[in-house]
Image: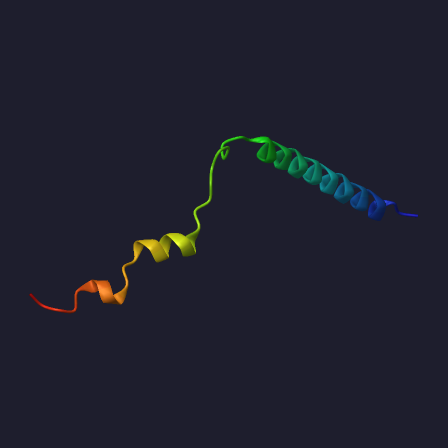
Length: 63
């Protein structure tokens, strides 16, 4: 009986496990970084409503 199929499946399994472990390691590193510490996200709706003047304030009157 030929065991080539089992050798191939074993190699694929080993490659899969190596890739999975590497991804978990990089995810752990990325999660533990503190580069975004103290960052507060801006509220887009609130900021854009405050910054843009109303149509009434654009000065439709001349003079």
